[in-house]
Image 1 (tube, rainbow over the protein chains, first blue to last red):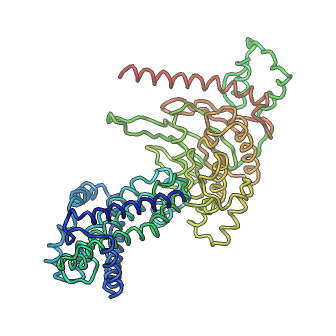
Image 2 (image 1 turned 60 degrees about the vertical axis):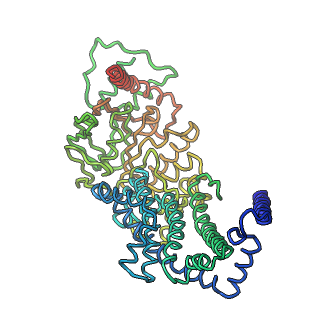
Image 3 (image 1 turned 30 degrees about the vertical axis):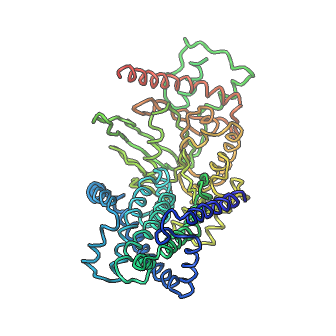
Length: 255
Length: 313
């Protein structure tokens, strides 16, 4: 209760400062957005369906890209965790690739896939794949030895070990990576959507730039941040809470 | 008095020196317990039971950081009968846990052979279940799902799994905690879940690695009673590792004393005290004292080894 009151007060404060700055006209109005202007852009956008279409198209892409990242990332992470040779070779390559921002992959995507849906999804995957891979590897590396011994002792073999012992035992780590991967997928998607007339939220940002409409730009930014937050709290925070509850781990500060 | 009892123990093991006239006969133990102890250590006409576990010439050594090998177990020859309750005591680092891991098939001997019911041990098998000191309960499963785990791996149907889990949860008095998660239980309860999880597979051999070491005395007493009852009801062969000599005498048909690194079986004691026994029983205490005397020597050796290593640094 106290938390939501605090959050309300904070939001009101931010809006007040924002409005005051806008009224003070320190910067020209075509550079500095106003709360009303952003609200108007959001209203117009939803009314003419351009934002709805943007949200739909972007969500579809991020879900496809993220799903591919999760499957590939878990497979790759397992391979790295179970094979010393791969860890010493491919593992190092992956670590160094992680420092590349997804914008670096845009030229590659364009050369390989042209101006296409596949290019955007490729860029999305480059953002989230490595985060999922790393956390899967960390999760499998950190499965307590006693749990895998207990599993073998009680008759678990091969795939049973994977599904019933290793995977659930690494879930706390894995979940962190899945959550981070989701956030990264969102970011990379927006980068990818700026490539061309793609109908997504990223393209709406570029439209705002082209029309010199700072209010539209900020409106789309607010929307992107909100969608990311919504999925995080509806899906990942709940999963996290349920794992922590079962395992008896302390609740995170966020939940 | 010490000589007298040791002599009795040795005789009951079929070894040791024959009694001579020079032996000073000891004072009988207080409370008139002597006759009882005497009887307890006498060879009894136990029915010959089938051999369950046999180890012959088992060595196990581990590579250490200096690049050489540290022997953990040396030349273990041991036979355990079906349904026998064998306790192993020894100082820390004597290879007791290693021995259990070898029996469970979670580790392999460097040389030597281990057979169970005549067949060589090649890996883990659900006829031999090890109850780990750290338990290894699965935190993502409920109490009942933990107990069902082995059955699920064996492909037992859902309903049968549930029924069997319930039987064993009732046996360890945890029926009301079926749907709890592991972290919601006390130490003694976790211990009982691990016991039920092991028993649910109806193993022929139950290997227990200091299972009650971390518990308070009351809980331990209660679990001793429960374990003894379950052993009588389901009659598995039990190999029970502990550093608590009284516990070993309280529970075991036989107590093996292991020496400090490399682990060898130093002495065996046949415990013929009548069951049910109690840790506070004076005859349990009396026998424990004798075994403890020998255990102390090994503990001293282990301390000396630690100190000399520290001095070298």
